[in-house]
Image (cartoon, rainbow, N blue to C red; front, top):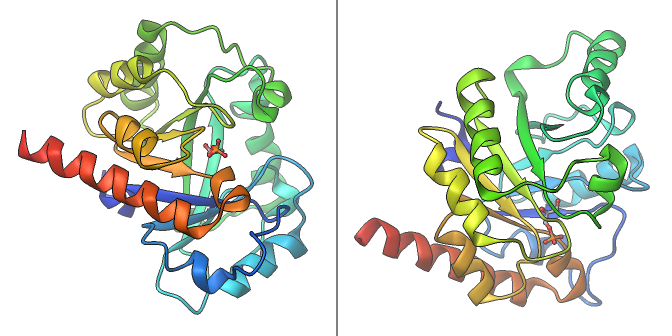
Amino acid sequence: MTGPWTEWDHVLKVDPDKDLVDGETFSDVCRTGTDAIEIGGTLDVTTDKMQRVVDACSRYDVPLYQEPSNPGVVIESDDLNGYLVPTVFNADSAFWVTGAHKEWVRIDGPLDWDRTTTEAYIVLNPDASVAELTEADTEQAADDVASFAAVAERMFGQEIIYIEYSGTFGDPAKVAAAQDALQTSTLFYGGGIGDYDTAYEMGRHADTIVVGDLLHDEGVDAVRETVKGVTDAHAETIAD
Ligand code: 1GP
């Protein structure tokens, strides 16, 4: 399992439907020190909005990935390093596990398979739009989360396991339990990372932290602090 994400400490998720902080540009966004930019959002995303962000970021070195919330917003662009496609392991309906994907492959296939990778989401904040949309069963104890992570890695060969608390800071014990269950997959954590300390805390358990709303709410300086937090946490883990 050797995707570039094995080297990522920090991912910045840009919602093409949300504005940047006044006075900031995508040039600033691309220079926060993040390892990759994921472009995606659950609501009101269109191909035009996606394209605008890709165009604005394509001049910089930071790898760019699209995270499509539905097949209708996928754009084809050489400026993209790839597509990270969510599949929700604790969704109520199989539609969000394989059903939407089946329709996509049928309509748009053959996909650009070499640049397409799935992310095995475990959605844990019941109030998040993604939880409502997928009717995720968010009542999962730490050992349930660990078990989902093991299933995703060992049975379904997922390279990326994504613990998603979008909008709120999650339970580090559940992230730690997932990490303990994994051998080689990369563990993403996203949700409520808002400063150095929260980035540091989740960075102690997750391989990669994903920062979203903070960019749109507080801006690039705050994002830079989260890069520092996770980098320090990982430096200490390696030293231990
Ligand atoms: C959302 O996991 C990401 O998909 C990040 O969450 O917006 O809460 O930072 P936040």
